[in-house]
Length: 431
Image 1 (cartoon, rainbow, N blue to C red):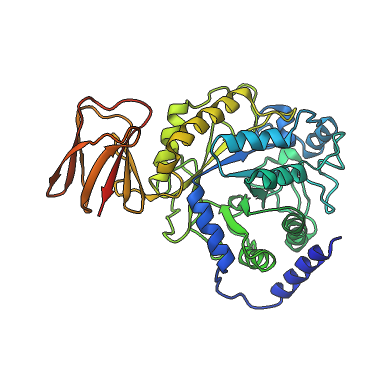
Image 2: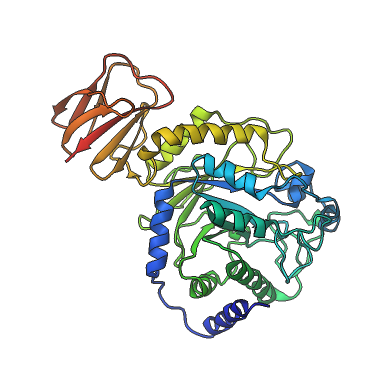
């Protein structure tokens, strides 16, 4: 065991024995938060043992499978076409700035060489390689940040509570060892991840499985920050932000909305960077029948609608069981990359727009530059209710001046023809 890992575990013991203190993010952490907020676009990769079944990441639960039988699939997991270099290059070419990788999902299977469970890709499969190590190294080489998804819930371990999210048919109907043992197991694994891999953020999930229990989450957060100050922590718990978190996650919804039904009561903190996770098709994990991929037009406009909120889009892909990214997903990544190479200046490093999402489109801001993203305008005029003074208006593409008139409550843009295309951008210089 590495000395750094021993030190990390010792830090946990020390923190467990002391009173909790109010979280004060370090300078390194604040810098990492700003870099994260500026990046605006990341790729989520839901991949694991469940990919073999090609029925999505919840197949063990939804299919009411015995977890003992489900685990036998590890003997057939052989992703011989996995190529970390190709994965990261495709992500980088898409214009995304980071990858979030499911190192351990609710089925408990670990995609790295962990010493704390034999139920992992090195020990339990004929493939026998640490894919996380390869991915971590390649992200570092190509300048892509690596975020790690880690599930607090577990459908297989006997020292985790009988799960509300999995049926008793899985055989998970008893509780042995107590949460103290499971808490120690999780932190042992997290120490491995933080000390043996180049991790920029931890993306937690699964707390919604047991609302009423004491997860000792603030203690866990404090320990994580004690061993890696700059590591960002986010948690998809569908609750208001908890002390110790460095960014706030919204599932399938723009921050402040609850159309998907996961964000009831999940208020926007107003202090933390924001991230919306969304699927490229319908599922998170690979499902062979799910070929309903969102169009490039939809994805670009969705990215801009999120950027208008000052938030990031974490766009999901479910890699195939052989280790390849689906061809349709690669096409979308290529298309988005082409768009961002031309128009990324209106997205990266921007803050929330002065005008939130409207029927005609959205706005994003960068200093004294306000970008007006027009998706669907019915006529040749667009009124913008602005409190700032507009000095200039011109098209982003060719810098052609756009006529405008100042009104009591903003400005009105006037066009020769009705704007068209995926995104017609007008740049305003404001004061």
